Image 1: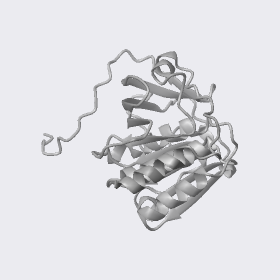
Image 2: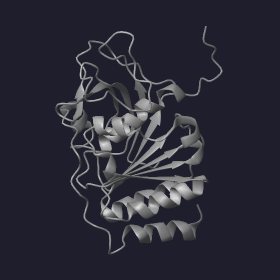
Image 3: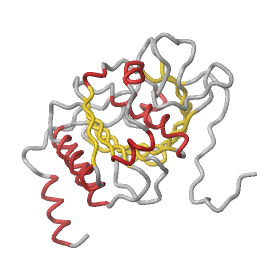
Image 4: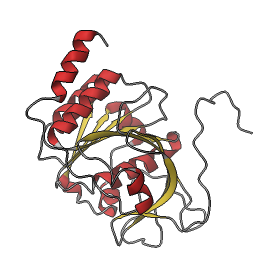
Length: 258
């Protein structure tokens, strides 16, 4: 980043139109809210990465669960055409399972990565939108683009979630970075693997479970938890499973699985 661009970005941070920092969105889980400084920071960018291609539905479900807690009734989900071709579009039944009316969700598809980032930035500047989810496939994203998204979110107080189909290796200036995978459900042999993100409201015996690893936190420590989505409370709760959460493994693609 050259000196002129750095000065321009610093000037944007002091723009008079920038709103005061809104209050964080508490998850209602004391252990996590304490680590996050009261909850997930609004007016900021957060990265949610899938632990692997098979875990993308879980990562998408986790992103959706965070987004539905935003106070505004509107949400935008922006994805690349390749993502739609490989993973499909968000399913209405799955969205409804998270207590969010599907008609309140606006979906946008783009051909190129640059278009996705531009659409996210424009959507984040709209104060009528409570949360913006940008879903991108594997690949790196430049620090300048991440910084622009962060500034756009700060101007409006909107919650910005960058959903990544694979665990990235690039550096991040986002407020938090999560690595999310699917955990075993209550019913043996039934795992969260569908694009519907979670169980339907007619199947309440099954709860979606997530392994969540907070691997970057600009304002506090990191940590790992197993969460599940509660239909009754319409929020995440800590699972009652008595098991530890293994830390995610990075940069070991050369290892062979027997």
